[in-house]
Length: 361
Image 1 (tube, rainbow, N blue to C red):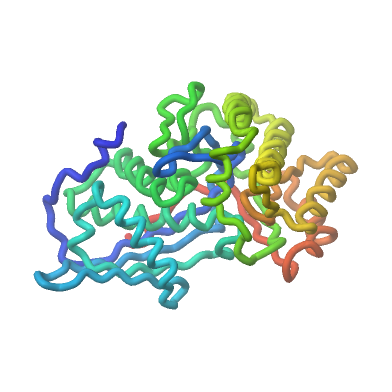
Image 2 (image 1 turned 180 degrees about the vertical axis):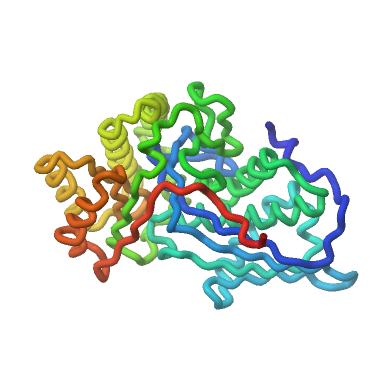
């Protein structure tokens, strides 16, 4: 499908008022998306695991605007009016105006809350924008007289991408691909697609424990980080490496090779942060505690032969990836050695999830 396919075709059923609500998960990229152009068009394809416990719950109350009324859009984050988030949501809706022109006819009140700390490298924009996009798609589907599931989720992913690139992947569960890649059929730069071909069952229940090394906002936003790739001396080689890793990961997922999966995840994470540190305007998002965790994980793996691996998003927090069979052993290790590196000894136990949930039903 191409961009014109997502232009709204017209109203069949006029809705006066109502509420749509979705709970959408975050995701953790194994092959990282870093570098973009235009409205979040990725410089390389990426593949992620959809999470479960880390999610955003959003409800959108809509009311048809009467003639002469000035349109109102209000945004509440965790029960409090949040102008900054409201402005971001308003700008997002302005960007998608050509695809959902009916939004101009409605007063909107958006209520949202996260199950995890915002702006700390757990892809809150991914879950937040995907939840909002799904809510708006529920309204659109009602106005259009109903959509089939394939179109509904593709357009939700298309819209979410415009708000936040990684949000495109949070519209689906399990393993998800976003970005054109020759080895993944139907992959697209415009929206994400679920990767269902030959994924070994071991990855369906894969664990992701997120160590909250730093819960505050990042010193450099992901938007600024992506922009740094525009004049980066290693950008071209990075994109080639990501393309190669996508092909490798497809075979790894099929074979159920946990060791190769973990090694690739670690290489990608370290390369992401190396790009940040080696750019024209270098910056560091890892904390001393982050590095301490990485060293401890590698030492534990070498000593115990436990298949425990790490990855990082654009932040200081560490995602620990491991199969379900070693869960008890890993949790004991976290409690015994790693919690000292976490802010207030906090961490989140998560795992591969099944995707968004329509909570208005």
